Length: 290
Length: 133
View 1 (cartoon, chains in turn red, purple):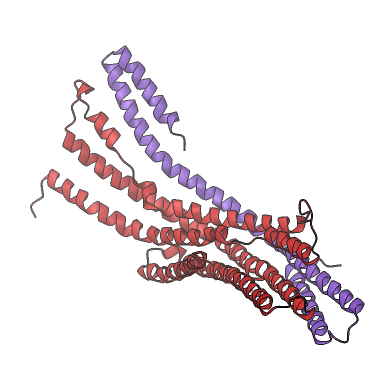
View 2: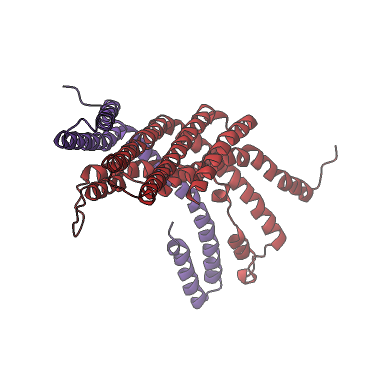
């Protein structure tokens, strides 16, 4: 078979290399990158939950002062225990958010998209003196070296990502599950006490026959149900957030189980399911804040 | 004596909650037959039980932290490693830019142009140090 001219062969390699590169790296890393980004959005919603342990402590303090018809120049509440509980949720938020932020940064393709313009420009500079390199040739070599560099670094990234997911899965499952319990059982549990205190306040008012006119009674009942609805909205926020954490945990488990075959196309499809579920929960959560 | 776990603490908090609820239901069911004093005492007990249950829930959160301490430390160290890898990959671009700056410096040296050499060294320094990660 007649050999192709060197320039043409070079052009064919140049044409094919990006395909090989993308085939072996971009698609797989995109799965991890997309999942990390979606997980991070969901984790960041923690800051949108408009209730903390400290808020609960202050609310309780105010409710008790209101019940006793007590006035203080500045409400003095002892909330150390609740501040400690908030610091725990903050640590969880920072640790889990930090991990997904790092994983997402490592998996995003922009990280290894290098520009060789500076090198090409300096190679083809007119001031180079006796050494003259053709501009087109320099550009072509730079493009090839860029693709090779990308392929090498993507291979490095894929290996590293697989190792990190492997190491992180067990502690991540523990942390995500612990955070889920804190939000769904502990923080939401505080709201259950708030509801009970609210119920007792209005029931005492009713039983004591404090309210006389129908208007006063109607207003009190309206106030009660409005306050109850607000608490229920916060409970729903917490449920959706906690459910999101559960989906993230499941998605990470799937990544872990397939960490050595990240190139399998089915994995991308499976992960889309988890990312999609997290996105739905994020969207529902955001609707509650509107 | 074994330490209290977060799960046990949550169950205790539940007990306090349901006890407080039962007292409330009892008060409202026997409102007419209770004396003012009895009603006040029960109301205070109801409030105290609620407070205890809430405090236990907050305390239980700190117990979760103790239980997850090892996992937290592992994730923090893995995150640090990931950041290191990201930094390594970002540094490649810096290397490419530095190589270009070196080439320009080389040209200036070949041409024996003191001003260009001075500028190139400045550019090289800026490329290397100017945009820290």
